[in-house]
Image (cartoon, rainbow, N blue to C red; front, side):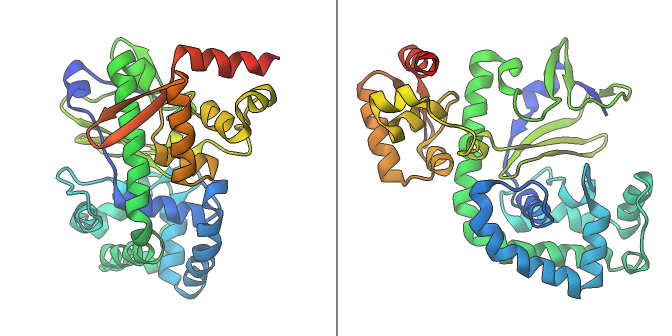
Length: 320
């Protein structure tokens, strides 16, 4: 796939959105041992054993996941969100249910995926929808309001980066090989394929609470980049406040300031630091009063980010 050719009209109509169905598929990938994150450990410990037991007892579920959720590829019919998605899981299932079993199996054949007999029946799509609904009800639906807030906060942050620095500022960190190459060229991975012209297509970006993302499409109409939600996935075990900064302003406040190297909402800061909203909010007020952070409101979302003084303090104390 390599490079997508995206003209001004495609960029103007592109959008960031959330998808309950894609988040459900991301959960299945996490249960399979791919795309997990330390912050997801309690959730994973609770639901992964139930999911794995289902795969052991259900030949169809085991065969479907093996065929459609591979290490470097996800079947497009499983995850492409609908054009007229209403933001609900049921709405996201609309496109899946409109797929014929033959078309779904054709996608697997193109990728060279073996198709076992249990996936050759006329009920392939209905049973696939049933499995996805089961995973949604088991492990995602109750937590969806919280997940959605984190995902939408990431979208607000990306939109802010896009408005202030263009696509070159908004794309870094979405995928390891993804970058804006200029002159209407969007590199989505490192594969040496011929460029794909997206003229007349819709381009969407969908964040997920997963360590990895993927590309899904309904060529030539829809092209979707699924990417890890940056604010949630900053690893507390990796992001450590400089010791000098901790001594100066306190360890928790230093950790909050360190995580604000990119814009984040209070909910995102809670997710990446492990502290409650009251604690994080109190430290943000102090940092705001000290002129180390600033905030801006976009709709109902408030983003916090470091000021030049905050940047100077957070980076220079790292060198002491």
